[in-house]
Amino acid sequence: MTTVTAAAASIPTSTLAPTAVPAPPSAWRFENDARVRSIVKTIPGRLGLLVIFTGLMAVTRVPAWWQTSIVLALISLFPRHRKILVTLAALGWLVLMPPLLKHPTDPHLFAQFAAAKGAGEWLKFWPIVGVVVWLFGMVYSWLVGKYPDSPIGRRPVTGLIVLLVSLLILQDHLTGLTWWGVSTFAIIFGHFIWYFAYSCNDAQRTDGTTRPVQPGFWRPFWSVNKIPLGKGAAYLERCEAKNDEEFATAQLKGLKLIWWATLLSILRVVADAVVYGPAGVSLTKIPYFDPPGFLPQYSTALQAHLAGHEYPLHVRWLVLIAAFLFNVLYISIWGHKAIAVCRMAGFNVLRNTYRPLESTSIAEFYNRFHYYLKEFLATFFFFPCYLRYFKKHPRLRLFMATMAAACAGNFMYHFLHYDRTIFQYGFWEALRLFHHFLVYGLILGTAIGLSQLRNSRRRKPPTGYRKAMAIAGVLFFYTLITMFDETFTHVSALDYGSYFLSLWRL
Image (tube, rainbow, N blue to C red; front, side, top):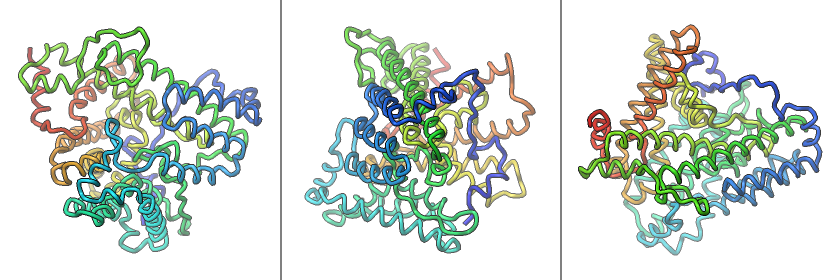
């Protein structure tokens, strides 16, 4: 099995390959101040820091914030047992936040599907399937490391994807207990598939020995979503604090990040109320502050356009701009909160979003906006394509590997992410409903590929007026493609195209 680490040196730095966004130099940072670190290195200092952190978690509505605080307190008191505590927390979070089908407006969504399939009475036994999924992941990852020349050793991620897709297609045709077993396995497996993928990628060390499987880093308590924030065990171990000095630095950086998340959350609540008014999407309302709003949601503007009652031209543009900016704000807050908790646990990993609005190229924005999604796509889609195909044509090789990641991989991740719609409509109908995201992926992949080819010829980054124009061009592009970046909908790609054309006429 070819490892990503061994191949990284041959990839141009301008590609989707794993690259960090360096922080700019600063005159003073409190996490680097020896006096501040000396306080945080003590037990009272750590617990005092955690009290502040817990308050900010409560303000920003971190899921299960007080349970998270207890885990972080134990890690602060017993940092040498960090991995054991993270593993126990991951097991506890399986019960606290079950990896079953849910929806914000309907938390019992899977129960409804089970009742319709005549399998409702079996729903309470889902933990048994959860154990089976974990055992499967451990055995599968071990086999990949032990037998690298076997079919699954050569294509471990392909095997995982084929298995999940097969189960999702099969459950359409089942009922009763058989449906319950297949569908429950598919749902829970779908929550862990990309964590299993990282375990398979890390299964073999550079010296050829088999790496032990560490299930504690599967869906850890700071990242219960399907995209691994912090990647796999190998990366987290490299970022883990090895002493009190590093632990203090990581925790201080975590506090700073949750503080930024708090400020951005306040900004989002206020901006949501001002822009959208009472119909806004914010779950937090400001007392005695209820402005009327001046823009509709993008979905409302799109439906009005399709019904022949479109808004004025300037509103159609403002709706799209607002949708893009709120999306950036949402991803930033969500990623900051998760990475802040990860850092408080002693893993000094890179943040998920870092100043995306300063990007001077389309490829750079993609790296800055959702770093761990980009890392996932690079690891499991970019590298396999880059290392196997078009080796005699460097520019085509780079472009096609980018398309494999930003288009094919991006589509596959998002399609499998919305498994509740697959269960609602069936696999093939859900695939048809999601066809517009394939158009989005084609546009995005092509743009990033061309951007990387251009960056490879650029001698130095733009400055002054050229930099300002480059940033404006990047933001303009991502604002336009925001119209396709929607979840499952009955709106076709042609309807989105119609809205796009309406932006250029009165």
